[in-house]
Image 1 (tube, helix red, strand yellow):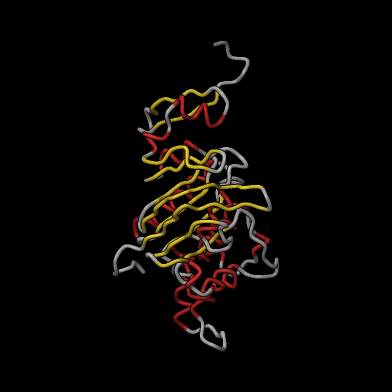
Image 2 (cartoon, rainbow, N blue to C red):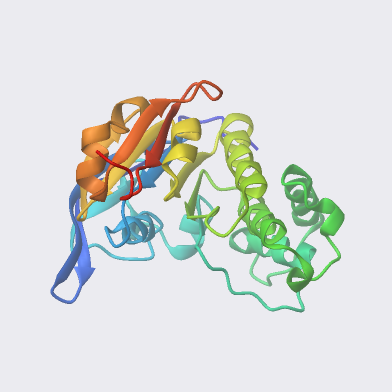
Length: 269
């Protein structure tokens, strides 16, 4: 159900954190609005997943703060935070014997009463979520019997069933073929447009980011290297400095967005 109150706002201010003496992200400040598609990109090991976990309240920063509608995340208990933010990690562990319906119903956990029993409303919302993500026909199949693309849509369906204001996803298309990548990205676009949900995604694919992101954040060495519309962030010299390789950036005549292609070392200057 689309939010009728003011647009929710997720932000970080002066965020720094790491592991032991190793600082992974340093002095990051960002703002993400509900109903927008915000993609975080950058080379491996630059702190993208750590940043996403901080946004989800799963990792506490060493310095700085994460805010939801102006309130620091630690002020929310886990149950209330889960009603507003859904987090989908890169790898999801689940029991193989569970059916798709049972997995999706897990999304209702933050909304259940003291006894933890599902009500008719929860079942209805699960059916709606499965229909929205096109997995309703798989409802009675076990999760281990599905393809990678189908499983990914089931986990997204669980997040939709959670009815959050923001959905945070860590590389949801990395293990999918091209067709399933587009299906997942189109689904995120629908969540933004039809449900008013804020989508915050970590992605390695700059070309998908160019086509779908309202805002692209390029992270390098734990800091924000560039932030803005994809057309402004995907600048050749800037990308080559961040990724450390030669790139070719041109406008796609089909998509009407910028397209980034790595230049093989065997190609002459």
